Length: 204
Image (cartoon, rainbow, N blue to C red; front, side, top):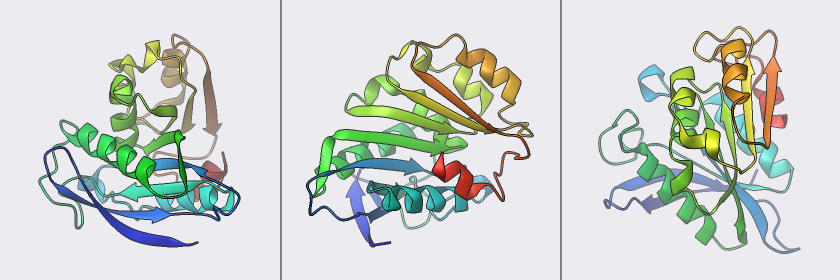
């Protein structure tokens, strides 16, 4: 996978550290996806196995990706804000990906896993340039208070049936109230870590 380290700034001038992966663009601009990691207190960063599996799958599908560490994680500047300011980091990453050479900035999506999913679905109204959203194992509390229910862009939710942070049955009940299009995928033997299911999640 062809990838390179990139740095970019938030609106507050914090430097964030990321990795940009770009497939062949000789046929023209390609779409791109910003991929978000789980909670750093639990060891989450941009090298999380689910995150890297998604980026590999995107690359082999001809889609670029940008994964990055939230503020205060890894080499990214600032202090981790536990969801209060990470939406600003996500917006900066969306802008960065859309400005990269060879990227079709009209075909940008976002994907997040666990805490990263909560950030993705927490501010859909701020992500005006984003075409679609993917939430993997989103904490149920973030789904319940998210304005995403009224958003008309395509949404994909992926969860493990054994996940206690994002209980499958309760999550499906929330999705039933959302504006379409909404898709749901469940892995019967997976828990919140998605351990052993990283490639299947990425392919979905």
